[in-house]
Amino acid sequence: MLSTVEKVLFLKQVELFRHMPGEELARIARITRELSFAEGESIINYGDMGDSLYLIIEGRVRVHVGEQEITFLSENQCVGEIAILDASPRTASVTALTSVRTLSISREEFTDLLHERNEIAIGVIKVLTARLRGELDRLHQ
Image 1: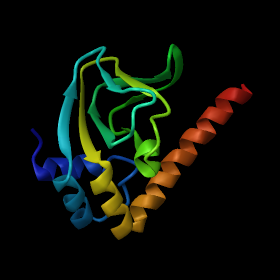
Image 2: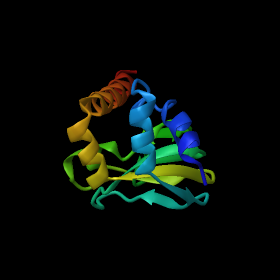
Image 3: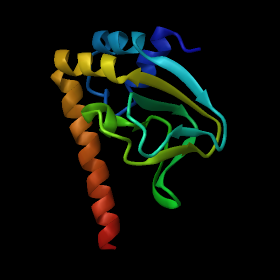
């Protein structure tokens, strides 16, 4: 299990939280839960209601819809931020390609943070925009 200080150091490396001051990161760190997934284990299932955001501490995951691969994510990246923002069903599945350790933030706690810290909302928008641009670039190749 990571200490609060270790969680803060990790959060500082995640694009979503990179520009937040340490005091705010400590606040975020306190609401996270550390979860582990085995290779091949499903982390998120397409169509399920999104209730958590996952920050990958270590390991590699595959984001996919059925057999169609969307992307691969690894350390210091996040997954689940779309559904956690709008409480809609998950738009993709996420499967562990290796053993994976994550920090999880629930939708309720994340929403509270968004209301209190607009910097987090801006970070989420930047991450989503970058992913959308990446997908559009891939389509144009």
